[in-house]
Amino acid sequence: MEMMNLAIYIIQNGLYAYFFAFFLRTDRRSFHFIATFLLTACLITPLSLLAQSPFLVIPVSMSLLYVMLRLLFKKESRLHCLLSIFLYEGVVIFCEILTLILLMINDEELHPVSFDQLYGLQYYTFEFGSILLLYTLLILRFGPKRSFDQQNILWGIGLMTLQILSTVMNFFNFYEAPWWLIIVYYLSFFIIAALLLKVLYTQNQKKKLEMTLAFLQKQLSQQCKQYILLKNQEQLRKLRHDYINFSKQQEQSRSESS
Image (cartoon, rainbow, N blue to C red):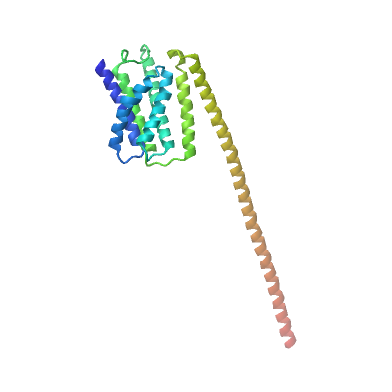
């Protein structure tokens, strides 16, 4: 049992180190992989577990991870480091939900995971395999060579925050969360949701204004072209009229001289 616990712990932290080392920009990938692995396994995870409550472990570990990434990956922007943490946590929660569904399908008895109570090896293989696959896809799609729009990053972080909060809140009854923590989570959820809706409304109004301005510019451009065309036609008629008058005068001069 102890060897299995140790193996699970090493694989978990190895996956996290793999994601951060290959997702963020660095010239020393091997060094950052080892440093991230050692810091998460020997410092961050034990410190976050001191929170005891499973509902405090996630925010504490994410905060410690952000500090670690800012210290290790100095070439990377703060926003990109923040995005990597939310992607890391979002993938972990998503794969845990998939594993939970698999446990329920197989009629397994559900219990909080601890060093004394573990599930079958096949479930950890499924979960870690899913995490590895999703981390690799994220690295290939949004890795260090990709450029991001700052607004899109903020939107992604906001949406992932709501997903993480809503997922955690589903386990309040299972883990018997204290009342004050439930209030904090619900307040955080509604505040972030309200902010995102406000930003969405502002962007929608801005988009409408941009579309209106583009339409007016297009109309103005068409009217200018039409005006120039009419002006050219008027000048052409004037030239034609002058030419006809000139021709008539020439003919009259010839007739008088003859």
